[in-house]
Every structure is written in C-alpha cells, then in structure tokens.
Length: 618
Image (cartoon, rainbow, N blue to C red):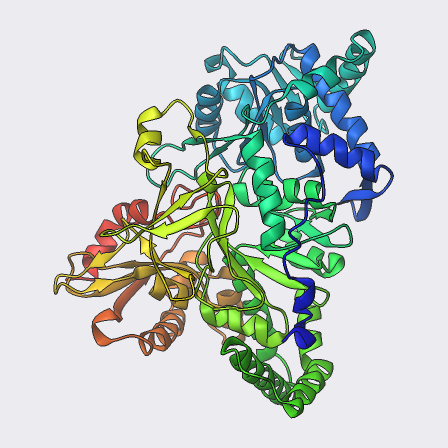
C-alpha cells in the first residue's frame, strides 16, 4: 500500500515542531525561525503575490499597534467580516498579539446577524472586507454602542468616504506604526502577557437549532490541539495547502491558518469561492482538506467530462478505474496486492488515472482530508482507486476541530476513525451519543452558562449530539444526529443521513433531506446541482427558461427518479424513498434554508416546505 500511495509520508510525526503555549508566542517563534521564507500566497488580478514570515510579521505588528491606538484592551473583542483572504489572517493574528479576542463573521450573514454577533461578543472593532460588508455594518452601527471603529480592508470605491467611525486598513497600519514608535516595547509586553488560559477566539455555531452560540476557545486549548493535529495527519514546510473555506469556521481556522502557522507549510489562498476548481489545478496542493460538497463536485465534474469523451476514452477509463478499484478493495481489506495487479495499476495511472487527477488538481497530493459533514463511502473509495487516500476526520466547533481521524495505514470508508491521541471519545450507554473529553474541548458558550451546562457534564464529557457506534478496532461510525433519527409510523428506525449521502453521490444532486418521522413511508426534498442538470438539459434538448422551470420538466424529474432508484436498490423496502420533490429556488448561503457551510437546515426546511411534504403523503 505504501509503495502505491506513498503512505509512509502520511504517518503521524508526533514531534513538537514549534514552541509556544499561546497563539502569539507560537507566531513570533515561527517568524524568528522562518523569517525570509514564504508562508502565504494569494492571487489577485491574475498574479500570485507571496508573503514571507517577515512581511507577515510587519503587517501584524502594525495592525496590532493600530488596534492599541484605538484603545482595544486585553480581553476585548474584535470581529472580522470578510471572505477568506490573507488580510483575514493578518487581522486575526494582530488581535491575538495585542491580547484581544478574535471573532469571525460569515461574509454571507445579513446585517441583522452581524448586529447580533457583534452585540453578543461585545465587539469593539469590526474589520470589514469591502464596501458591500461596510454597508451591513453601517446599517446596524447605531444599535452597537460598544463599537468604536469599523476598519475597511479594501477601500476601492470608498476613497471619498468621510465618516469618523470608518477607516481603511492602510490608515490603521499607519496609525499603528506611529503608536509603536511612541510606545516602544508595549506590543511585546502585551503579547508576552497572554496566558494559556486566556480566551483567544470565538467561533459561532451555524445556528441550525436557534441563534448561533459563541464557542470559547483558549490559547492553551488551541496550541494543545495543533500539536495533536501533527500526530493525526503530519505536515511540514515542504507541503502546499489551500485556504478557501470560511476562516470563521473552526475547520479552516484550525486546520488551515493555525496548523499552517504551526507546521510552516505554505498556505495558498484562492481568488474567490467560484475559482476553487481553477486554483486547485494551479496550486496542485500536496495536502488538501475540504468538505464533502467539494469532493462531490470534483467527482461530478469528472463524470460529466467522461460523458462528453470518445467511446475509446470511456473504455480506457472503465478499465483503469476498475484496476484501481480492485487494488482499493484489497487495501481496504488489509490484503496483499499482487505484483501483476501493481503493474496494471501503474499502466492505468500512466494511461488514464494521472490525467483524471490532473483534471481535478490532486496529482501532487499525498493525501486528502474530508470532514465537517458525512461523506459517501463510495466516494472515498473512488479517490482511493485514483491512487490518493482520502482520510475522514470528525469533530465540531466545540472540540476545536478534529477529535477522531482515520489513519492512512488502516482506512475504513464510512468510519470517522479512532479517537485522536489528544482526547478521549466514547459512546454513552443507553443513548448511543458520542462523548468527547480532553484539553481541546471548548471553555463553554459565551453568555450562555445554561447551554454550557447542558453540553459539558460534571465529569467533563462533551455531549456532541451525534449518535454512533464503535467497532472492535476502536473505530467510530456516526449513524445520525440524536434529533434526526426517523421512526416511521410502522415503527421502523431509519438513519436519514445514510440515504442522503447516497443521494449526494449523484452528480445531479447537491443536497437532500429525507422525511418520514411518524409517516407511513419515506420521502425526500432534493436540491439539484444546477450546473450539471443544466448541462443535461442542454445535451438532451430539454427546454427551460429559468431554474424553477428546469426543476419542473418531466425529463429532470425522471433524471432524479433514476438516481433515487439507484439509491433505493441499496436499502430494504421499508427504508426506500417513495416520493420526492425538487426545490424550485436556487439557494445560496444567504438563504435561511442553508447554513453558512452550505448544508440544508433540516427542521427549517421541514417547516418551510410543510405543504409540499404533506402533498407527498396524500
């Protein structure tokens, strides 16, 4: 297995590569060690710009000085309302360096949500990306008496702005340079004064069951977890990684920004969320972490390209992926791979599979990491058949990111792996709930002691809300959320996520919600993949005028029914989906039905589309 996929390079390092028990201490130690080496790269107007550790340090120092000049005191909060950019990282590290608390806000949040998050966190300084985000802040600033200043990162189109409450990032850096000259040594004192037990960051939950809750993470918990990550999936300074998920989400904050800070791997920022497929081919990351939706999208792109290829190309792919699948089956079963099969695989790679990997942009990847949501085991197996191991990790905001992980040496698709070395994980008796305990577990929810007490019990166990099982090897599997298990009118217990994951494996389905609690049979709400379904319609001369009319066509209905039939064939009759309806609105992260991480909110969808659901049971 290691000879085929170089899995010896994925094995955990287990060594401490950077000193520091607070984020600022870790950052300044990294600057001292790595100085003139490149840390981050960002593409702007078609040109990649590199940031060395020294350049990053200069910017962080000046922004931090500016924050102190604005009166940001240790323990006070500054929030960042921006897409994922290098400036996000600069502002975040500056806030932490001067002893502040850093909070991220999704750029898709509405003005009312910005107001709530700034109120709840007692935000004193708000960084906004551009004029669009500034408009949201200005709309609600009268309701935020604690807010002292709004700092705009990109002032394009705002040069003539005259507002005492607003300044540009460049102006803040200039203010910081002057302040640091007048107060020599203060920033160093502030940074050194940070303690492991001090609150460092707030990460707000996605709010699927009510208003978002601010999870509090300390410096000590973050640095402890980062060291743990390097025993889970090791990186080093030679690795290239991508940064494109929202930095206000725990996955990119820990696994992207902070883990890169710790290990020294280069961090490449995409131009915008829409250019991820193009940028990944340019960057060719050696390690690549993404959510299942991204992996599904890449797979869909390959399947669509395959349909447009020649018959000879299709036959070549079928043979090559067949060889890869046979090897993947043996690897997953822990069986030896014969020399003959290895030789056929090398030929399959040379003829076909390497081109597929280049089409996606994973041709240099040592491994892929998936997390934040369940993924189809068949999809994991498909990437393994290409010759790239996909390792599933599981965690949540409250566990400071990953708490379990599948080791490369013993993969089990559909499993989230054993507990990471840095925390304990167990299954609660009676309920089957997954519990986590360790120094990585969050401090609690800001301003919500009752919710904190409900979530962390007296023995320190975090109640995750996920239901799961553990096998004889200590590998965990998530069967569902405690609140999502369906019990049909016939008394059958159904795990909707299994059906939903199988549906999302289709290139024509982006997301799905299975319905059936206290109902006679299962139904589904389906959100189509607009790009792939439109391509299908165009290729088959299906007339449509807009997104809604596309979902209503008989051909598209039949297309989704065929995908449903494929999924139903894998399940017992009582677990099969009998009817479905397609959402007729093209949803984005700004719509209430979706979380900022682009997952359908089950309860909200069930309530909002109750008439359509009831119609499926008439």
